[in-house]
Amino acid sequence: MSLLRRGPPEFTFFFLVHITRKGLLWFVPFMALSYIMYIRSLIFFPKEPSRTRWGAPIVWEGTFDREKDNRFHRTRGTVVGLSVFAVGMYLETYLEDFLVSASRYFMPDLPLMVYVLTERPSEVPTTPARRGMSVITLKVTRQTRWQDVSMLRMMDLRDRVLPMARDQVDYLFCMDVDQIFTSIYGPETLGDLVAQLHSGYYLASREEFPYERSPFSEAFIPPGDGAFYYHGAVYGGKPNLLLNLTSRCLRGILRDKNIGVEAIWQDESHLNKYLNLEHLPSKLLSPEYCWDNRLWLRFHKLRWGKKNYEKTRA
Image 1 (cartoon, rainbow, N blue to C red):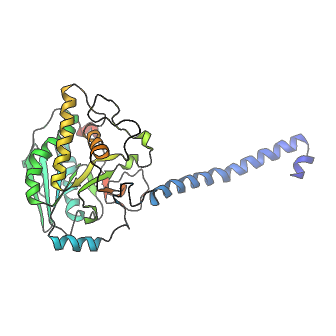
Image 2 (cartoon, rainbow, N blue to C red; image 1 turned 180 degrees about the vertical axis):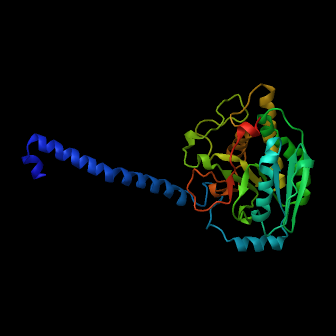
């Protein structure tokens, strides 16, 4: 500093510029690394790693004993169901990979019933199924708009899947087909009513959640309400509670359609209304269970498939 005070103006200017450039070369990478480590810390050490304010567990790797859970459910003779829609181009684009990965990773130690809903049952791929896994194909009517396909899944679940599932399985998961299981998705996820934290909004504030904000829609969530944003690609639970969920969401969807209103994210918006304001889930799944690769996660059980909406939503 004494050199700076005693030096001539032109030397002082040169020295400051030199220091600034040299400092930036060190400072910018340091700040970038600090930011990355901060964001990663939010994922690896979330604020609420294992419990909600109403006491529901949030399932992360390391918060459960899978062998203990498996022993418990094998002793009880638990059977798990998995429902998936494969209509239009989603059938040939995603279904085979979904089924193959489910056979390998989804509840591998428990009996499994898979319900495939499609308008083309004869084109459902025949894939090798593990021991204890059965695939049932159900024919549904193809809707003309992809938005209606999304919304009216609630009707097919209520009317086609759940009447069978309540007599065949103890728990049922409802999932989008454009996903792939990547590691063991086990009995730690089973619960009365299970919701999936949306990885795309995991780091967002509540004010940023894309809840339906129009009071004219049955999916309306007032500002300040709601705890989490849930993903419509994964939800599950006991069949009787899923019957309540699908019936309530369908009622809201049909009321909206009658007055020419459509919620911002179709059935996902109605699902969020139900799970946030009407029936809090008994268990939440961390983003590890429905992973978007924009998040840095050490573990993931199910990842989003490559999206091709121009093809699949045509």
